[in-house]
Picture (cartoon, rainbow, N blue to C red):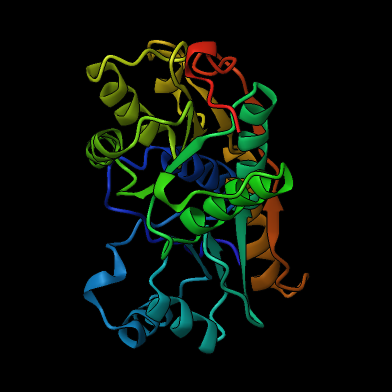
Length: 281
């Protein structure tokens, strides 16, 4: 129906710059298809039931939600309110999700480092309560296992997705371990914080330690060195979310998920394992 709003609940952390590109493409696609996009206040202050009732009262067509809480996700699914979740695997009769293939993406990132000769690879990501953090950790561990390398729990660290917390987590890792030659960061912002920590500890990227991130935010092109990363398809994510939501609202399509591939973007922060830091088996 024309003129209905397509609201989304957005994240408060400004560090999650990646989602601004997703929201931009949500807006473009919604406008192109004749829908208005409403940017509501975040639902965190409301109970899940009150949030759903407020949407119904305002005659909202459907919801595109970024990083929904479990309780709000359940309420939307149980109410059969047309919903598309981004980066959460919520699914029901009138709900589905759009996300990147995080497991395969992390596997690709790790395989890139393995191909360069790295065997001791550290991994710094967000909390495993977060779906993206969990899936990226699993992908990294799968690639190591498939290469015959036992994942080392001591080389896994968790922090917030932002620069500051990743920087602090990297300093803790470096204080405890120096026997790795590469790091997979859970996001580009995290990689930027790690890059600073490595530099302060006298380690050069990629001469001493290779570093790869996720998302391909624009800032990664301007770090020193430019950041190798896994590019997520913001355009397909935003457009796909709108198209699936409208299909659910109109009843023209079942609520099927959209899982998007990612692309390895090789820049200057990854390189061959340094000979002087090679650790034989």
